[in-house]
Length: 283
Image 1 (cartoon, rainbow, N blue to C red):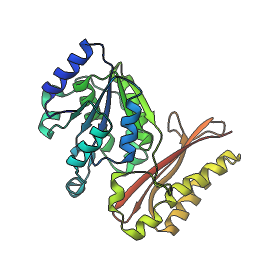
Image 2: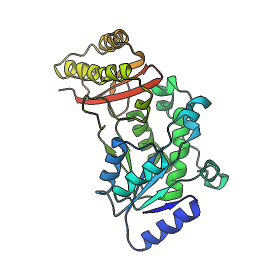
Image 3: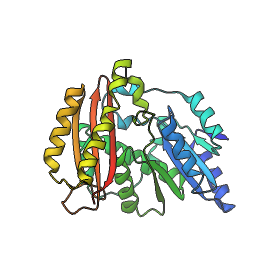
Image 4: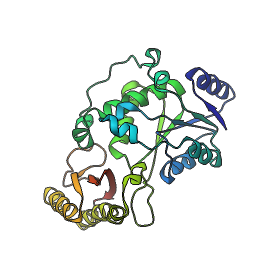
């Protein structure tokens, strides 16, 4: 497994692979890898012949400096895990390398309303930071395929739209959310939970499942279900930002006749902001 820190070295290796007919699959991460990330790498192995993983803590995705400073960084463990998964190359750049002016994507993008709703409402500028770094990484690595998880569902749809807006020939593969034995979605921020909070945390997923079962049974009182779910999470000890029932393709408010619905939630538990979602076929 190779490890590189500069765009020049990254491009040199990828250019060589492409000249040999290899299919490049990119897995962008911010490190502190867990089973959710490793599932992306395993999926990548089925999508192409060379796996490139990036480890870069993107400062533009943090609205507070203390959050950026506290974000867990485990580079040695990350590299060991990626080596075990037969990753071919890991790109670990410094901030100045990624945000050098020559790597900025010049094309202006249309305003995307997804940036300002749900998590975008509660974390202003977050998705702008996502779009900025992902567009740069795509420009640097020039992959054939890129792999993302469904846990960050809003981000997934934004990246799919970004690829369309930039006219990139990159296939976006999505991987189902990976969960611990009690249903809690794997997340680097789970490390912020104390033992009592960790015992409560699976109730977020359980609440989404409860709402999903009601939708599958034919109920369509979406606004009422969102309010009731929010109240139950509050009683359990969460501080919810939102519970939302949306069309799975557009994230617009779900229509009565929608075939596929996504139920999303974001809620604070102590110092951790947990997000989760489930996809349901409405029947």
